[in-house]
Image 1 (cartoon, rainbow, N blue to C red):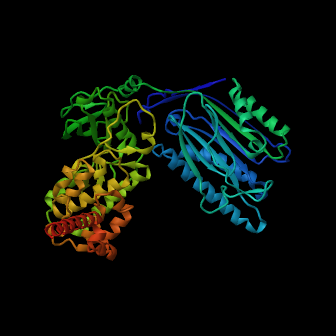
Image 2: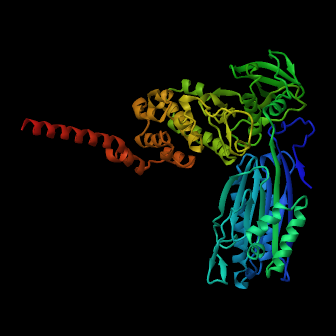
Image 3: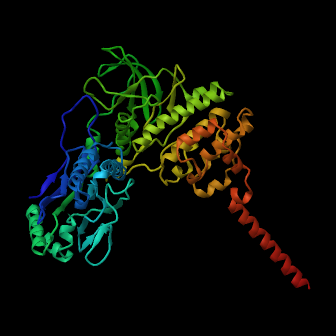
Length: 593
């Protein structure tokens, strides 16, 4: 019968709080496979429904593969692909989106299959299989497909969601044009579509769909009742009666209900821990003695604390009582610790697990004795350029750890970077991060879309176009410019950007005008990193750091390129103005004549 899947309450621990978002599924899954008239069954199928928190963060997976019999190792290829995907996908970071996680797993599987096939090339033993994957996460169905296995969705009508990758030689002969293990780099189709209550997803191999009409299958699915497994077996039996001479496999998943918790339920889970009381020097909270307040704002407080048992010094961050009834704020605060626990870098402050059960809401990080980068900038009005580049490179390495977790920082600024006693920078704040895998989970909480500090944020962030890794690179460019010059780029004009039209008012001021020690080739690198349109920026940090260290003739030529290349819009405006003036002169001459 229907299997109700919901969040599993975990016992309280001293470590990470449990995921606050949950999605309750009610699914009726079924599957069947048969060798048919063949001696061996080279198909492989699988469905995995994990417990929480993976049920919410990774979703439900159904996968079907048809090993290519002519490749001799088709059975091993299909089994390896199905088992490998079901294992590896759920081992990928929860911060990754479904698309990123699945593609990385599929590329790794294809690399292994292709490598094995070439290893045994002399024996003509190929490792080739078709593969179709259905991932149900939140209210979205994600489909990954290569080959001629199929995925259908039955709603008002039966709709094939995949395209067969086959080439027909004649009416009776076809061959696969795409499959896993066939090429070094697989071309995998991807589709994301909505999920509704009552939807039935049907996956099958060509031993089924080549011998049955879609209309007949749809009728069976509509009447499958409480036994999807039996329905799948009946479909296979009918395909055999229709003359199928291949292995036969199919899966059916009926979505009985998709219930996201309402705001009240999410708010209740977010507020399981109360906000801490006002903390003063000398007070002890959960075994941590307050030594001093490091920073306070209307959004949070940061304290230097000492573990009373070990004398270890740590930093404790607590939420502001100004937001004790704001679920979006509380979610962001809780997510700071969740994000920090998943970042392992010498250039990012390490989140520390509390040694006993928390009595209220806070989190702990390592203590970094030193000064903020903002203070360093004030103390070094004419810094050593080589030292600036080293600091920027280390910050970039820390940001890269975020990006590898599909997380964009969104609020990089000098106050959020601390330099330790050796001058090594550490990023210390994660309160504005965008996490791809979490953002695609349906939530009743209305989240802030515009985050960050205007003077350090990429323009597209400020009008809600969404931030990607190039937004963090822009912020790093602002910091680099400020470290070198003590001034903000664009003469501080970023503070006035509220729409794309405002970009026309900004003018680049070379860093060398503020600091003659900055070479022109370094200024060219800064200008590209700080391009107002993100498509014109560097693709990654390594290019930016390299160009800071080495003159790039291409960038310098770009800075002195003809006006038509640097600002085509201005050229067109000038041409229109000249044409209008010439027409006006011509009209005057005609009238006077």
